[in-house]
Image (tube, rainbow, N blue to C red; front, side, top):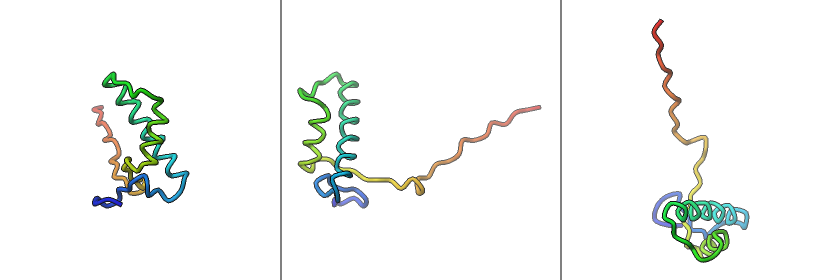
Length: 80
């Protein structure tokens, strides 16, 4: 656990399935960053992300979809 509430370190993942989900999301993040900056990681993004997750270098948190504050889109008023 880290100082921030709800933020976990990947080395403390309670099971291998959660660790794989964290690594997959980290790989997506790294891939997008690589596309935006043009930098190459020198290896496959999935391998790098999994290694980082296993070392505990990835911080993550899960959001409860029921608790996310999402405002419904405002209805447009039409004049008749």
